[in-house]
Length: 115
Image 1: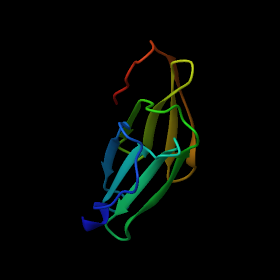
Image 2: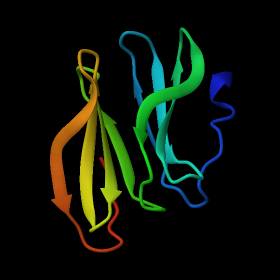
Image 3: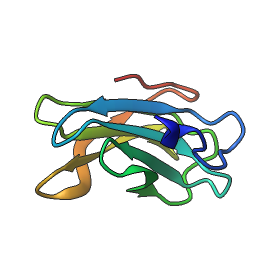
Image 4: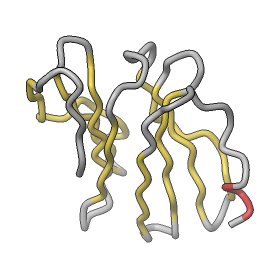
C-alpha cells in the first residue's frame, strides 16, 4: 500500500484514528489534525490509491481527541472533541455522505475517546 507512505503534514501530537472496510473495495481511512487545526481524512482504496478524503472539521481545538469505527454496513463513525469538553459524532454512509451523528456527550477536561 505505497499510497499511504505520505499522508501530509500533521499537527504535532495530533490524535490519529484509523479504520478499514472492504465494500465496495478494500479501503483504509486515516483521520488526524493538520497544522491549520482542521480534522481531515486521508483515504486509500485498492482501486484508486491514496488521496485526501471528503471528511473535514475546520478549526478544531488543537490536540482534540479523535476516534473512528466502521459498522458491518460500512458506515464510518468519527468521534471528536469540541470546546466545552464535549464529544460529537460525524457519520458517513454510501447513500448520504457525511452528516452529524446523534452522539453528543459531555466529558471531563482532558478526556480521551475510543471506539
